[in-house]
Every structure is written in C-alpha cells, then in structure tokens.
Image 1: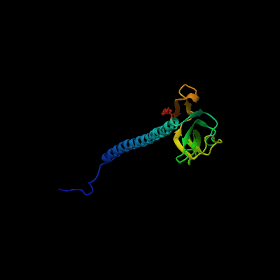
Image 2 (image 1 turned 180 degrees about the vertical axis):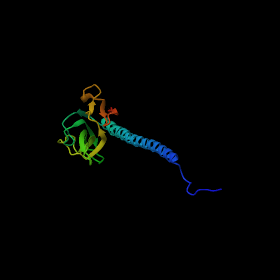
Image 3 (image 1 turned 90 degrees about the vertical axis):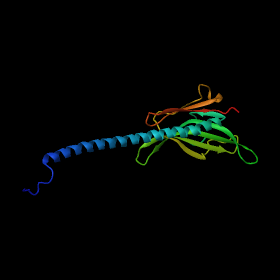
Length: 194
C-alpha cells in the first residue's frame, strides 16, 4: 500500500469550523466576564452604602439618647461648618473626683470632599466638642471628626423632631439618601427619659 507523505493535518473546512466555534466561545466568556465585573462594582456600592447606614445609626441613636437639647439647621456650636444638619447639646460629668459638669456638643454637618481623581463626593461628618463648664463660649473646637456617611446623595439630609417642637423632643429623625439614589433611609433616635 502506498501512502503519501504530508496528508496528516486538518482540512480547510475543519479549520474554519474550529475558528467559528472559538469565536462564539470567546464572545460568551467575555460577556460573562463583563457582567461579573459590572455586578461586582454595583455590589461594592451597595455594600458601602449599607455600611454607611449601619455606621451612622450607631452614632446617631447614642447622640439622641444623651441630648438635653436639639437644634436643626442652626449656627454651629461645634466647629465652624456652615451646613449643620442637626446638633445635640448635653451635659456630662467628668470622671474626676469633683464631678464637675461639662458641656458636650455633637454636630452633624455635610461636607463636599474632592477625591484624588478630581471627583467630588458629599459626606456626613459627626463633630464632637466638649467644654469643661456648663456655660461655655461658642463655637467650640471639635475634639473628634468622624465621617459617618461617605457617599451622601445630592438631596439634602432632613432632620425633624417627629412632629413636635424640638424643645420638647422625645425622638429625632434624620433622613438620608445615598449617592446611588437607590438607598434612602431614616435614622431614628429616642431620648433617654431618666
């Protein structure tokens, strides 16, 4: 039997079919990759925003509990920010042997921050101030500045005293919208009555 050399290999039809199948597979894999990357980005945004909500709620409820008075959209007593959303003033007693009263002021303010890429983001900051007297001279210098919401939306935060005058408050609400616009939530704090 006589064999010809060089007959091993693929025919033109086999090569064309292989290229067509490979093109379909690469298209499907790259589509799945793009969907996965896009989903990961939106999941990261949702995770950050829900973390903001949890973080803000932790501070806000404690601040309302310890407040003796509340002011909404007022001249700041803690810090020099012009955009005070809500401010709490309370009395605290130092842990020294004199138990001298001191004033504690907590202000929630909105700040616009420019990132490294030049993009601007609105943030909600919690400023805390303390004065060693019961009647301090305002404004006080903040002793702490904590960013409680990192991706605040364009809609201004709304604070209210649950339908009553803030002088007689028992509950304070703070409604926030995150930057994505998908997450709107209301933080509620109840004042300690005893």
